[in-house]
Image (cartoon, rainbow, N blue to C red; front, side, top):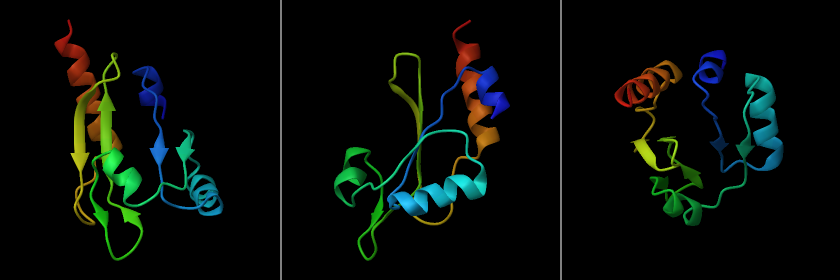
Length: 102
């Protein structure tokens, strides 16, 4: 998290989990950023243009990096259990975008 603070980046998470499960995840992983909980499938999945599973209420991981104007500058969508953007890769990408402005 320190690296993202140094980059002046805010992080937020979204989850289909109910409040009790979302709290458990935050506590178990010592997350230091806000997590919205209770997303609805397919309504909220469609809002963020994410893949979702029709057989069970889950949204596949979707990561977005927003620029200073709050427009999406990078998006990663998973259609299954593989293909998530790692934190160190996100930081590298953010540094790259920052270097392009100079």
